[in-house]
Length: 451
Ligand SMILES: *Cc1c(COP(=O)(O)O)cnc(C)c1O
Image (cartoon, rainbow, N blue to C red; front, side, top):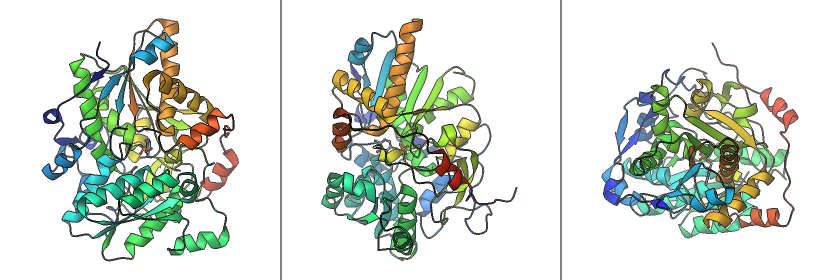
């Protein structure tokens, strides 16, 4: 058995796969934050091409050739068989992982950032503004902007800004301007700082700042790293590659596992497969989305209408949510601290095609270290959550003797997260319980939407 399956550049997919063509029920509309009526993406903020993709029901959308050339800087990415981990676990299960850490930004996020920079440039935009949690998205967008000669302004969640100086330096090296959020650069930032000068920030606050920035400038567009349909669409190149790679090994996965922050890396992997579950071809395939206990959006949140951001400026969407004003505890998986979840994932959970689980951060790091010592890759804390579940499932296979094929979405490496590993290794990491009262408080502020 080969330890990894490689595709040539000629085998790289040339189209994105759009799940909206194959949903058994269409997605609910998104709604304007003011009028509460169905709406498109806010027009001054997004490139027209992205708005089209957001609502498209075409099954396949061409990847522009110029973009394919950029993808080839790191794509196709490898699919590994985790032979050494399987052996360490003494499991009959076969574990495969699709590794996006080989991208120059260290994660899957570059797949959409270069696409967004491409369309922005094509439509005459000069500058992109965005938010970043752990710094992965900011790094990816900074790089995308550098490739297309655009300016880039990044609002970085303050707790990460201080925990991860190297991410900031990476962004600055690619030419971006980075400020800690909440910042003095926007009205919403100044308001939050005046109420709480010690605010550690949240992804929701940073989104509001970036939207305000881009909305107030003629030369700028806003860019989102997760959650929305067009981002999930761009990530489907990952799952299409994985499918081709597994076909070469004559394998179809029984189980696909990934972490969900906004949902994009995992959706990128499982969407090309889930259509076989929807069509009834693979009814028993399990698709498991993993989130932190400290921010258990899908496992504990209600499925309801909520704003995408803290300030209530972003569209209202139907999703699992902990409330747009919820600020989760500062767990080390910064990319998993969003209050909501991609509507596509929520819709598929609601329809019963995807299940969700929540795990604590100490057992998550235990799994990450076990994975690193077996496979040599130090995973980012986000996909480490998925590794926890993969290891648990592989151990269940050991009990039952089942030889399941498990596909893991390994969204990035953890080379900028070694501070978190240090805390784990020195026994200083703590588990955060589900912050029930704070969630209940936040859920009182849900918007009311006409039936
Ligand atoms: C941002 C990030 C995530 C979480 O975002 P999704 O949109 O849910 O994928 C997960 N893994 C890594 C490595 C990330 O950088």
